[in-house]
Length: 635
Ligand SMILES: Nc1ncnc2c1ncn2[C@@H]1O[C@H](COP(=O)(O)OP(=O)(O)OP(=O)(O)O)[C@@H](O)[C@H]1O
Image 1 (cartoon, rainbow, N blue to C red):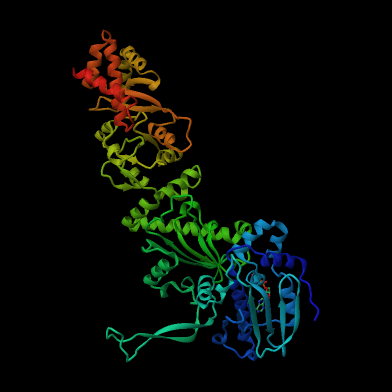
Image 2: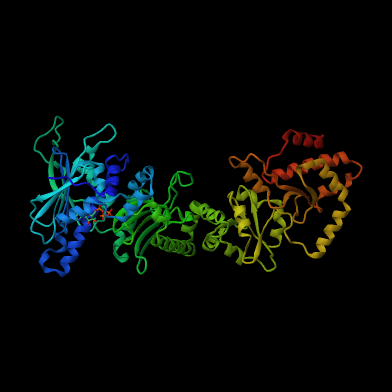
């Protein structure tokens, strides 16, 4: 019989399959099972209107069989089958345009990755088999045909025997090599696990004969007098797939327990999720989504290694393990899956990114997750705070990295600790509680809530009954700069110098005093050199003598953060201002020394500056000089 050559584009794919160095060879089974399921679908739908089919839904199945001696794995279905022409047309060329596109547009190295991700149908079987024979009988035909090929050098189609409609595909597995153990596909447990992994939700039973070890009762006793245990091997034809996926069932039919155990099993989490989202969308985009908000972060969640994404299914068949395009980065903690009939099995990653359906799904999911989080915030505060403590940083980065573009989506989800009672509050809660007359939303940024709530410059605020938000994550202050204001009130750092607390008269009084002691301040500034840009009177201190504030865009906290970032060679410096409390005895002491004892004023300036550094949580630049100055005072 004459061998026919594959069409050129098919040959190219075939070469790739035969010589595939791709490690994920197991996907061939997913492809064959999906084809079998499609073929059954066709006959099943026909049976609904055509009495002559004579089959009901429960008659359809996909059978797998292993023959270790012959080194074959067989996949059979009782679907629509193929005529000789169809065998030729379908298996002699690559039917799918997606596959075609990628051979045209990509170089070899890219192709391999695409195969791994998406498979290219029937031909993927050549990754594991060096000979494939497909015996098929089309429904309604009175004879069968066999298509056979050893890969690259073409194929034959010849008449064959087959009693009933359907297709039987026999894969003659390749011999093991140093790197590839094709024997694994002769192991029923391995094959069954591949089926579970990719094809668990195929709607028809996928059956295979499995061996089971069974404990057998015996009369005999072992040397210790205990009943002797024996095992016998039994064989049974088992259905390997669970068929109806939990996400395809009606919400009301799935128990909370089922949702949770599915999550634990599927996403390898020992802890229960905080929330479950089960969505079935109908209309222009049809899909089902089952999403989970975990109760804790994966060990590598905040590292570069973390791969976000949802599992992507097309009609119950998994086509991608982690599809990052389904989630915005700031909801990267969400686990789950999306199933849509509208997506093709053989879609490439590049195509996915531009897929309109996928974009619509993504937008809808984003909305739904946001809604779920808002709901949690409103109705289960404790859960939300747990969520916030684990994943809040992601939300903050979501706003920060988009330069505020995602603000509308995420702003209401933000929580910060407020100084008055240490509670986590939303920006709205903070703003709603502001007394009349409060002009700004105040905040302090630093390493811990405890330190921030004791900052000297917060005293006057509290006297007025003004609360402040304590920002302790490194991104916080940068985030506030981007947010700029809330509810038309600007954010104002307590370390920015001007808290806007004074009346016009108080301001004028302050300016007058500043003028009077200008020379004293200049002398102190001179003593401190370029460590400070200014020494002046404070408008925010009450009982403390001194504090450090910053002028301009870079705050002291930002300086700290920026300079500890890896790779930050060029040191960033805030424009530091040493502020003195004009009503404090220390200021009286300075006034008493001025102008006769300039040297002592200079020493005091050093001391006060160092104190201010310590209060701000910064280290003293010269601890020995600091210690000596104190000793000098004590003498
Ligand atoms: N078991 C089968 N029964 C009937 N027809 C089949 C079977 N397997 C394959 N075919 C036919 O062969 C064609 C080519 O299959 P192939 O797997 O290469 O691509 P595809 O199924 O069209 O696309 P995909 O890449 O999504 O699998 C199918 O479209 C189908 O018409």
